[in-house]
Length: 222
Image (cartoon, rainbow, N blue to C red):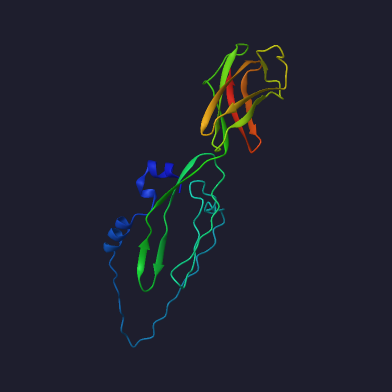
């Protein structure tokens, strides 16, 4: 489960104490009927409605939960191979539980795990900009590899929604290269001038010999 979901509400995860507290409030009642008469259960079929009823669809693709799989083990031990989602930076909380007709219910201690990309690029955008004005967009490249890498960072302009505030202002893209130390980041500025109003697309690439990443964002132009 995504750790962000737990920050919104702690009850989103399994809790041993809460489960057993809920079970202690459940009482079973049994009704026994003794009779020598014939007992018939007559079920009247419900007539079909002429109007359409929307069918309830249970969602299957949960982004916050990447694994919910049942495993059956006769030895009490099993390995669960799971591939983590390919998101950039996430903190996952993994909790397992087991049910047995003999020993009952048990839960594992929740384990936290983080996933990161080898290289990542992000671009800081204002809420909006004016058409024809010069805007400085700051892109930040992070190197999560364990060695220094020479990275190329580019801003794409294939739709001609803006122009670069440089000598080659009608270029389809501008590329900058820089050496980034391991576990460090580097900031690069792109100077652009929007040519159209509305939402324009900004596509930033970051690449090195061992990894690459692309980030696409929208910028509002008034």
